[in-house]
Amino acid sequence: MLVVGIFYASSTYKVRKFFNLYRISIMKEFMYLVISQIVLVLPMALLPMIVDLPMNYIYIGFMVITLTIISGFIFPAFESSINESTSSLLTFFIVIMISFLLSKPQYLFLVFLMILGTEFVCIYRERKEIFNEN
Image (cartoon, rainbow, N blue to C red):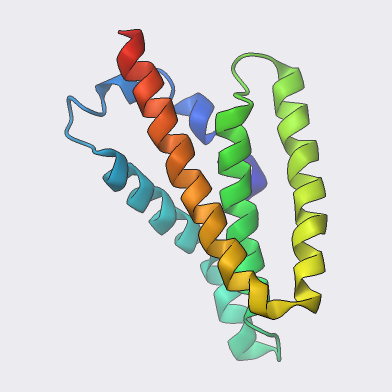
């Protein structure tokens, strides 16, 4: 699950310049990413139906996937293996920080929205950089 997010930016780097040609807007790319994240979290979302588990864990799972995508944009793996290691380590520390939010669940949804906003900004900046590069 974490590897998918880290390598998203690297795997789409070469074809991202064609996204405008294929009429894939920034909002569409963001929505497709959110839908794919939902699909990845779906098995965890079914778990509370079987086991007595709070819904906070689903938010945390979604945030972890989103954070790996963000760290993949910030530290692209195609540039060096150090970037891949850095983004994995950063994701690990951020997961620990998110787990502290379980003591204050009222902030969980706010952090969830902030992380989604950060993901959108990363996609926006990456697309604008590639567009200005050509």
